[in-house]
Image 1: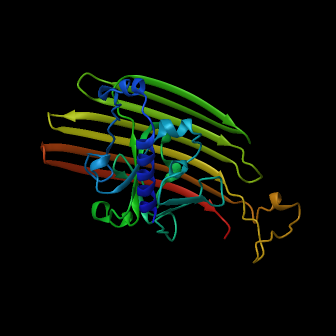
Image 2: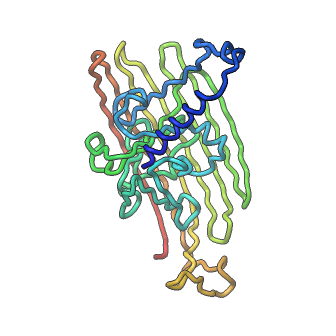
Image 3: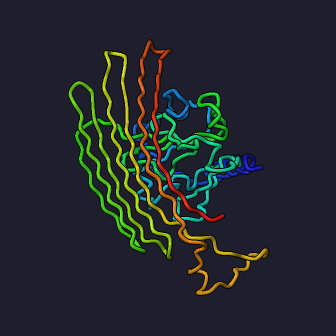
Length: 321
């Protein structure tokens, strides 16, 4: 029905345009050489670099620069407005326990129906759960959201899709520093340092510190993230890329406000904002992820890719259910 309506609307507009008189001066001002050529978008989430229009998959590409201009604040904002993707933030400090559903496929726990990647390498926690709240956003250039099964490419983690966070290419020397602040004691500091070399090698270091006092008691968050990336050409056809990602998170978790079966909030001593359940409630995690990826181009039709990863986590959680 929707396709028919769009087609009918296009025919109606064309017919109306044919009945209107054409201004010769206006007609003469339109030239073929004034057509604007759109930038080509190349995606890699399907393992091979291809123009977006030539990819046989439903992919949305988000630019972090454009997201920040629209008010990007915390993780999962990259899913806003993406067709076929539903997300919500559960109890906690915004993105502490996000729930992501791609094409209606929901998981049991920790968003286990899709796969998160950084530069094509899985970015998951000790329980194979995606680490959306630990993504080094300061170093990310674009985000590729693939809707649909990709298990044939990435294994059992890609039942509903994949989200590939691509870091910024190291093409020149660059130094960036940004400070942000907001309500409820929110503050974030981002720093980025890129250095490129004549032989095509490059190194990038980004760091983020974030502090948030919370909108009510027991909702404070403190986050430190350091991301180091390097790229080295190997001969004429090979490239070695690697990264180290360290993150440290200290987050208090406010308890869920009790409700009756009909949704009515239960009266508690001090009001709804003071109900914290059994204290203390928190979720602390320290993590270190290292990854290496070697790409070798055999010819125009064949390329080889080898990846390796090491992960170490230390977590301590006290939650109420």
